Image (cartoon, rainbow, N blue to C red; front, side, top):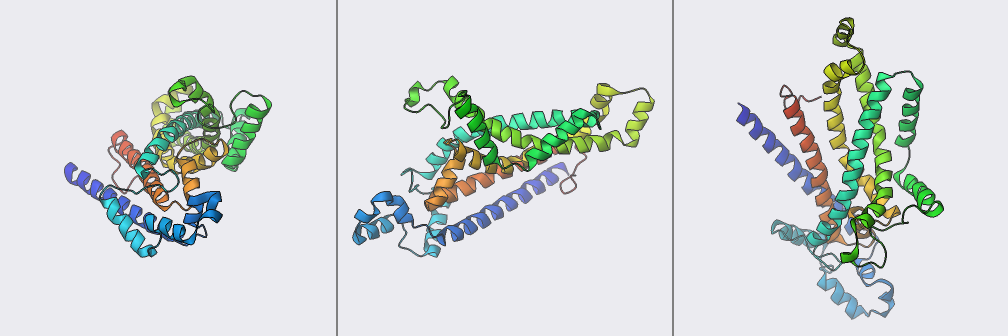
Amino acid sequence: MVQASLFKFIIGKSIRIISLLAALCLLSFVLVSHSPVDPVQAYVGADMAKVSPEQRAKIAEHWGLDKSPAERFVLWGKSLLQGDMGTSMIYRAPVTDVIKERFQASLALMGIAWALSGILGFLMGIAAAMLRGSWLDKLIKWYCLTLASTPTFWLGLLLLIIFSVWLGWFPVGMGVPAGVLKENVTLANRINHIILPALTLSIIGVANIALHTRQKLIDVLESDYILFARAKGEAGLKLLWRHGLRNIALPAITLQFASLSELFGGSVLAEQVFSYPGLGQATVQAGLRGDLPLLLGLVLFSAIFVFTGNLIADIIYKLVDPRIKEGNAI
């Protein structure tokens, strides 16, 4: 029975991710194909006036731009099934290599922001619920509601102005110091450049976790079994530890893993503000310069990344509480 349930779970998730990826690729291809951006002009750059019509035609032929959109999509799909995502027109390198290099930088940024926002948001939500109605509760709610409506790029610019321009504590941008060879970049240099982007994403990500945890814990504290526990003399941290944490941990875990999509979207803006060389900046460049192979590769990768986060949340749900079955999770 357990094996059948697991097999059904795997089949269902596989069908979902395959259909999702196919739809995203088709939609992205159609949108980019109808974009006003001229890929050849974006490829050549400022020297476009020096390029003759014959050279322009050869460039278009080299990148397959002389074919119809349908033909290009079919050719790209065949290459993808063979494990080849194509070559980036911007970076003149295989798309897989570009994604691998950029993902290493983005993983560090998003990992730090994801962990900090989850831990701080969870603790703030617990504190606000346990001290409901106090000045601390009101302060946390005000803080979270303000941040929930704050654009990522605006907060990034604000932190950049204060801590980089005015105070000079952190570099203005980039992932490593300018003019320093890769082999000479130290861990301290990388940490110094990643603090502000990670802080920007962490501050924004705290709001949803904190507000959700606060409301969930308030509902738990008002339940009948908590009233019974209070009648037996339990209170404070002991009551929270024995009866509250498990009930608020499961929804918080799900929300935290589901926030990967928001985190990825926020990293696009944060990386642009801080000129951080990650997947977000590569996505913006691919869209603005009509680099279709790279853009489609990034769409596929980001979809798999977000889907994996949701899948991990489902698996943790099942491990923590085996009573929860597929399709009945709350």
